[in-house]
Image 1: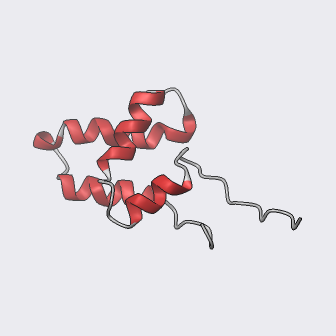
Image 2: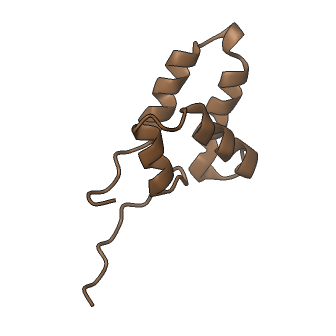
Length: 84
């Protein structure tokens, strides 16, 4: 059996299927931000930025637009490793 290729760690806690769905437009950018915030709050350093962005979605009437936040969440998702 061939050894598995090492995968690049995901600094935000999102798995490859979630990233793939986000990057293919099947999942809204807010969904992973909401998931990270609901699952880990602001306690887990790996998902802290996504939790902050989820807070920002709640405050869009006072600051950034949804489109700006969508772009930030998408930027937090690195491209999936080749073959994933």
